[in-house]
Image (cartoon, rainbow, N blue to C red; front, side, top):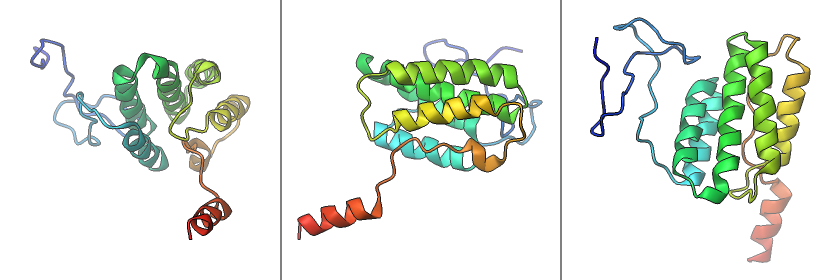
Length: 168
């Protein structure tokens, strides 16, 4: 069977996938795929990836973050690669592959630790700590809630109140 190809001749895989990104037989009902040509602004990319992580779709979050990595400015490449690798590491945890999870989470933490700049309120220190904590607990039973890192720092109520108060 010939693989579907895009206008530039690159192979595209139209095979359906399950929620963990594993290929399903042709004709099966899979989860919605991330478009190969996804191109979103950074803040929208982060919101979309966070929504996918929150729904337990780390593989799809990886694809969203990978799309950003492929189109980002050179000085942000390490950051987006680290975020994509974090999502793949979580995917390996979900699939029951601790060795793959260890490898990708370790790579993610290293990339995030060396990423400069860290724009868009991405919580790089928190994500590094998250990856390291997940690595430390790979041999324990993890809950779904343990696999939903927060990509962006949350604004504290007092921060938003003081910001609103200072503009009043």
